[in-house]
Amino acid sequence: MGPAGWRTWLIALGCLAMAGLPACGGGASPGAEPPAPAVGGEDADVEAESDVDEDPASTSASHEPGPSPTDTVAAYLAAMADHDGSPDLDLYTADSRERMAGRALGRGQMDNLVRAYGECPGTQAREQGDYAVVEHPGDSGRCSPWFLERGMDGLWRLDFVAMGAAIRFDGRNQWRIADRAALGPYAFAFDE
Image 1 (cartoon, one colour):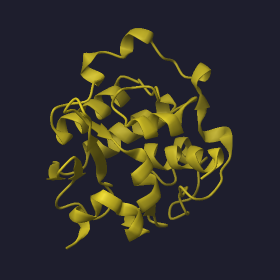
Image 2: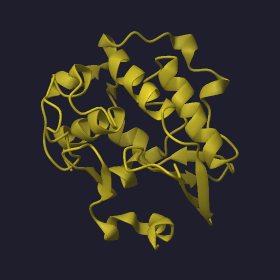
Image 3: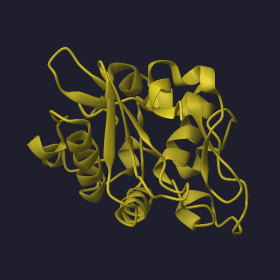
Image 4: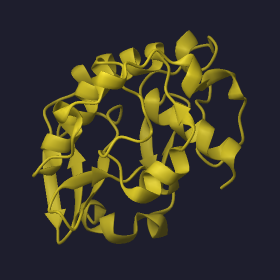
């Protein structure tokens, strides 16, 4: 996937359950097709790092990967709430950081993500070896699952590369598995 495809995936990830909001698609009408990871997009919805208000001190211990998958998801949402959209956070797998290099979500996108996930049912982690999927049991499809990988240090990190390859959103912004083969080591959580 080229840089434009990854920019589009970052927008989609940052705007889960947000189709139609100006910060997440330029004011598309409700029901409009949200950005998909595999399709190239415009740069207008992703701000360059220099355009994002970032406080270097905002990358704090609260934005570190956790000893459990749900701790890491909570730390990621805390980073978004603090407007710390740096692609260099240790919350992400090395592959995810590499793919997101030089890009950051804007404040509006981070606020929308925090608001959307604040309305989701509680989380539940399913682990198999060094891989985990954090889901929102009881959700109707608007709260996308999170894929995480345990590092050599025993801490869990978000795998946005795998999420981008496997998850897509429909015209109602409901998530679905688009490519079962792309689930790779995360397939165990979707065998039902």
